[in-house]
Amino acid sequence: DEAEHLQPRPPVVTIMGHVDHGKTSLLDALRHTNVVSGEAGGITQHIGAYQVQVASGQRVTFIDTPGHAAFTEMRARGANTTDIVVLVVAANDGVMPQTVEAIRHARAAGVPIIVAINKIDLPDAKPERVRTELLQHEIVVEEMGGETLDVPVSAKTREGLDKLVETILLQAEVLDLKANPDRPAEGSVIEAKLERGRGSVATVLIQRGTVKVGDIFVAGGEWGRVRALLDDRGQNLKSAGPAQPVEVLGLNGTPLAGDDFVVVDSEGRAREITEFRTRK
Ligand code: GTP
Ligand code: NA
Ligand code: MG
Image 1 (cartoon, rainbow, N blue to C red):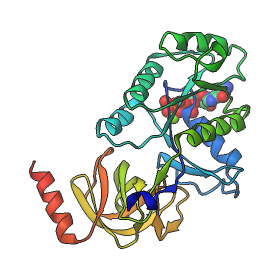
Image 2: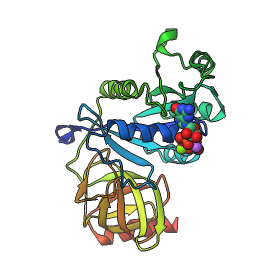
Image 3: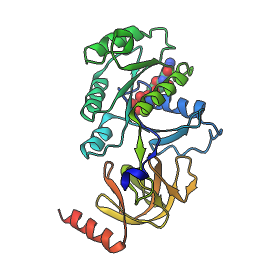
């Protein structure tokens, strides 16, 4: 029975917002302040998905978005990759077009939003103005009688970061997130590229089950046998489970962001699926 195998899993949090409002800076700051084991150096920078272990020992998976396009693709694929959206709004700039886009995407996906009002260290920061502007888009923060949690932060001074993590964990608790790790893995391709000396490399967010080295899989119109699995610090893994982002090596071609990832039981099955998909 599938229900008996459900186990708690980390939340998957996507960072969204207008260009230069500080999404990546915030993620960088979160990874350095809250990562228990000090692994500051040697981080693989080219993957946009990270898992951090916060002070309480809980894990949180973060996905950075450089723009909203990638996110749209993921949503359009119907991949329910994200549990929570952290909407980053720069306190000196306010609600901007991509902020509004992000709100729309989160709503369409039915994903709860936490607002991070960033850059509060700046002299021209106006967090109150941000809250008021959000009202026009039906985002009513708690302080204004609504239900959306907002946290003033600074990626630069690290002010408010603990509160932001606390708020994410609180929201995650409400969602009661679970997945079955004891089944063949399924996930979603976050990004993929052809790399010199490594072949096609896909960053995959595992959503259900556990992927292991040696597994045969299909990713969109491509397939392969897992040659290596690496975490966001470039460490080799033997396996990866629910909510874990991993780099997967061993692909025969390069899939697309948003493609599904499914472990199958044989090479024949993998060929069959990809041939069918390529023909369409
Ligand atoms: P895109 O990925 O291009 O959409 O940008 P982003 O949202 O990831 O913003 P990024 O982290 O690249 O930051 C943009 C600029 O804002 C950089 O120059 C950062 O140093 C600066 N910045 C980010 N957070 C803060 C902050 O809290 N305070 C101040 N003063 N500057 C910040
Ligand atoms: Na930027
Ligand atoms: Mg960025």
